[in-house]
Length: 422
Image 1: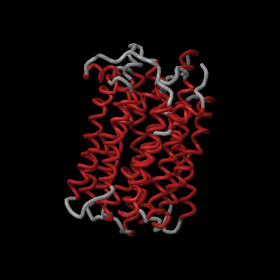
Image 2: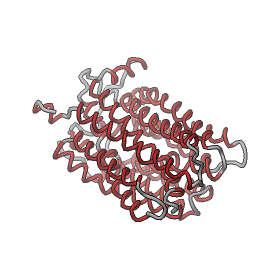
Image 3: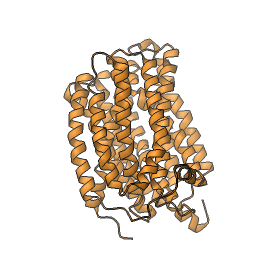
Image 4: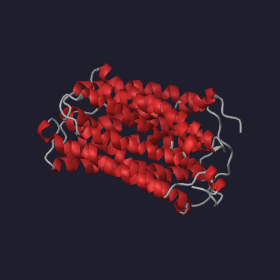
């Protein structure tokens, strides 16, 4: 099959940039903004994040089912983008009072727009090629733009006035402009997905069909463990930098290093996946993350150079998490023996996004209260060991579990099936 032209591939990937710009403030800056700068109790912030993320996650299969019945993927995306813009502006312009209601309502609107856009966008990419390696290339293009967006979201608040309410409020207006521009490029110039019959099954049957696929179930189990392992440090990294390293002024730099390393690592994982297979390449990425976070547990105040190196190593490992799981999922959808893979891609990605958000919900909703129970509060450097325990060692345990699961029960890939091997 002829590879997609680079320009058209870039047009598809462009929307990943603003979607990532939205995701970083939601999962990294929002707990610090509301729980630190605005003075809301950490347990309350964690409870709101947990409740809204779980509600959002539960809605994803329904949104995937709707996306499979929408006339076109791009129209579903176009409806979602204004909702995302409205929600982000609201969240990053908090009022002086009624913070609980404002945070909850802003998250509901933002998550709805983000979920609608993400599910249809990912299903769109999964349908652009029949070739297993071309699918990795498509996923990698999307994730490179995603990491550019994350780097922008990490760096801009400091430039715009700091990682506080002022800097994040200014970031929201830039986000709206970038969303409009990149959304227009993707909607106008991205390659169209292959035509597939629109799904006609009911919601329960559409939800049951992907879950009846054993390859999908195995992949979900690995993805869940690995995702929670990645979500815990994402939620706690700003607290770790401030209270363990005592280097809050370097927060933006560390985040930029991490995500730039992730972008640089994606071509490495694409090449390694061609050589040893996607599953084994993903296992290698997990083990690299374990090495990085175990090293982080040994750090203390002022160890900024070492933490910079850890950001690079863990960022390279992140590239595997971004480039490979969605590509493996596209292979699983393509091999759907029930023959519904093409028309039910939205349902697959609806369940996939449910698990993604459940991971983030449990990371925020459980890690923050546990830290509070261990005696940690933002600004308390004396409780740094409790923070390091949750930030560093818990992800190591989870990553080792997910790597072992994938190694012992690999998700078969098309080439392996043809050769009769795993």
